[in-house]
Image (cartoon, rainbow, N blue to C red):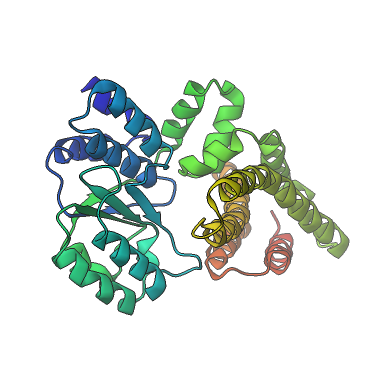
Length: 351
């Protein structure tokens, strides 16, 4: 089991899922549905699962080669199909259907991973249903989603569903320590990651995450009804968001450069540039929202500590203001207007 366990080294706190996948790999089903929050290692688990399947029966040297390619997401018989926009559309489902009908390139099986499938519309779901009911014998389809919408219950019934739970703050903290991250900084990064291992990975290279934590923590003491002060705080937060974005901007540049090299060597057709650029835009949007949620969580902790020491209705209202602002992030609001509205409301409370 030692070799099998190694392909799941990047899967954190999902022991039950790993156990199920290790058992299933010897005689895999035609379809799986990995369900869990963003950053809960669904893609890492899918790669580990594919590595077990595609390396099965090979001699050790060849198996090692296959596992390395799969874990890097570069094996020709591991295909990942992600939506280019906010929703999985008919065109992307057609890619899954087309890929399912094609024979594997170098293995006896092909694994197709449909990422963010919870965003698929009903038409797209309906088109994939037939493929799941009558799959080619060599094809394994893995759907990945944050949840199973009502419109996807039928399609989920054709799959083996595996539940991924959010990674705990302590789990991310321990993972950071294993990456030789400093203990004090690991506490802040673990809190800032909010259960998302991918975000924690990005924050490892962010030298200013502690500064942002301290900034948010200081806001309740700095706030007053002076509009100039509120404007300065909003501007400071937005500048900090821009600085936080630099970390993933650098990674995005590296990914584009690597793609350009592959295009030069193999040609532009089917390189996935549009998909990569669309994914970069989503990551930037998510990062800024995650940073705001991190800040709001920090504010909530400050107000909760205060209300524990000296309960008051004003503090209770302040907590509710922050909660409403956090909920508003689901509607992709204008950052400046959201922050200004929050701080005006907080400054009106006698905290």
